[in-house]
Length: 372
Image 1: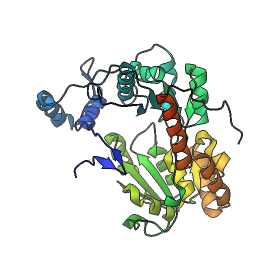
Image 2: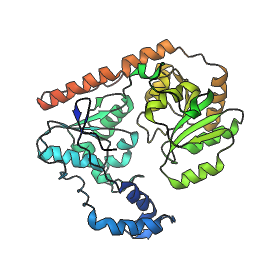
Image 3: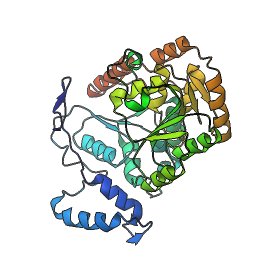
């Protein structure tokens, strides 16, 4: 399929690093600075020669925290970058060089980790250098946060005021009638849905398996995307009979997956998650939620489910309890989503921030606190 050049009137200029996944996999196994193997993988036997052979034909990486040559002279009025990462550092540097405003949108709580408030040099789990991430966070004109926690953290640790744009959702898209039919695994009702990727620090599917083993009478369907091949092998080996692993479901069919589930479970880490969109999708689908942690106090504020204080024991207990008794006030949940997560309202706010920034007018920052 050719990449689209325009979607609903929005022009797209798409640049794809087709070798990034392979380079990331090699970087997970080899410390390039000390030239030593951290973890052996048989895939290295073809990945290293492949990268060596293609190197002369690949363009060099742009330099972090410097203007990106691919972005220069594009006649851009404002730059918006997602994630506190190396790419954002180059976007911010480009905007600075061209005297145009820049926004960096925090995508996870790890984008505000302790180390970024110091001068320490290190790389995170994704291999991103702290210096570039720090540059993106501190040198951008505006930082957009997903939650009140991030707003408070940004102010306390980095002495910056942020703009609050909670994750948006179009609620009606998650209620029947659905635009697409349900895929085969979701044509019949089942107990628990889990969505994430194979990792041991962010989505944490191993914790879902641990709870599933305590509940052999409960049916689990886990949609798990590739990330760490070692974790994937471990989970495929250890998954009990009541767990079905599903590689991928097209996004257009996800409303039918939530509709078929009696319960949605989140094991996302507070340290690494920003605000999981799956919580909004589950709430809009009227599928009760049991989560290890309450991100942005969403569950307590909306009433869409319960949190487990990061305890797997409590998680298994609440899953069993919730399946037996669903007493959620969905009208209250709908009102909360409309008030705090409406896509139209959030888009209007963001558009106003962009207009003010281009006009060099002040933008009113987020409030210091909110009442539940």
